Image (cartoon, rainbow over all chains, first blue to last red; front, side, top):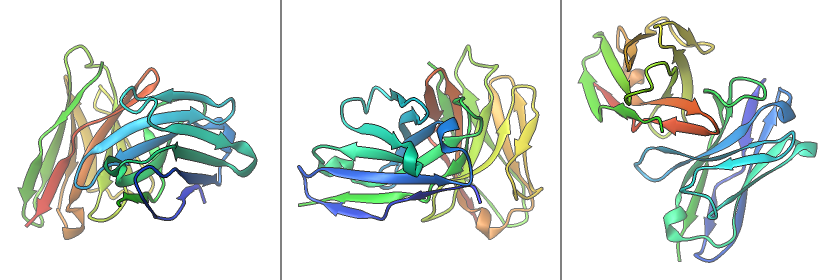
Length: 121
Length: 111
């Protein structure tokens, strides 16, 4: 089965660091871009950035550049979204998603189940 | 920069049909889009793509009640024979060089 499985929910304090993960299975992980999408409580979907695991080519939405780091480990077919210093405003559900075509950035046809990140003192 | 605009909400009774609209901004009438459904407390699910010529291509397991069409800069998702489980947020999505773009979503109430 082709799927993206994300890490569990996290509760963190402001200023702490965090890395959440997204493991792909059932397909050639290195051949597809993987992106991250934020959904703040009660709000819309926002594209954060995307990585091509084959060569770690990474593109960021300017709104998120410098705020998060996207990476991938091809040995375990896993993409990561990392924060060095969390803020309360980072509280959101985070989804990983894969576009339809190999080596191309087009429509999303596969979503992870989401990881809820709560940042509170 | 491509922008997608959706109406915030729509409602219809069970058994009716509803047509959701996603509008591309001027100069982007050739763009295809994808529709995604997000049921309450769940993650998004891919429904279909809709091309500028009106052709659509559905994801696996998407019922025949769901169809897509297009006119100019507008892309449509039509849901017929509405059921309670169709109550959800519906997002359109497109893509460009190095970016994904989402519309603001339409909340569909079945009541």
